[in-house]
Structures are given as structure tokens and as C-alpha cells.
Length: 108
Image (tube, rainbow, N blue to C red):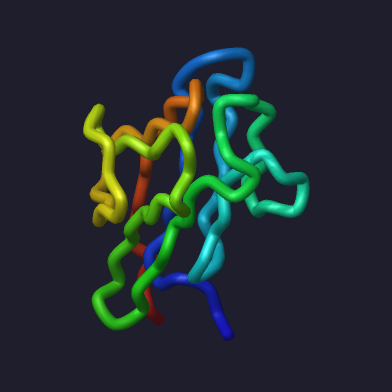
């Protein structure tokens, strides 16, 4: 099955990996400390499987879901369990601050 129609990425905004970009190319992208996650962060303050970025094909929208992590997931500074993401949102997982970026992909 093909990836999302909209192209999204997470851009790290702080720390030693600032400027690193992760493309969101699947319907489900797992973020965590475990080396088997899609986006692996070297941060003792996050869970092995901490959060999930979901892509809904019907609405063409992205959301983040906290996977019952100990320290939580924040969107724009507010702790969330599940939250739709918009272009420019800040996503905080442990000590890592991401900016969520999305661009439409032309259909043709």
C-alpha cells in the first residue's frame, strides 16, 4: 500500500541532533527509545515505545498518540493523550523538541 498523500516530516529543533529531519512515510510511525522503532531517540526520559504518529487516509490528516508513556507527549507545550497535528506544531517527546511539517503532494 502506498504512503500518505500529504508528505510530512518531523524536524528536530534542539540538542545535538538539531536540524535532523525524519520523513513520515507510513500510516503508522512509532517513536521511542527501542532500536526497532521507526524514529529512535537516545533519551532515557522516554519510553521504549513512546508515541505513535498516525495518518488517516480518509481525512488526509496526521495525529499523534501517546502510548501510555511515563513522561507523556506534549503538543505546543500541552500534554496530550491524542492530538491532531497541524503544520508548524511543536511536538515534545522527552527532551527532544520536534516541529511537525506537512506539504501536499500533487496528484497526477
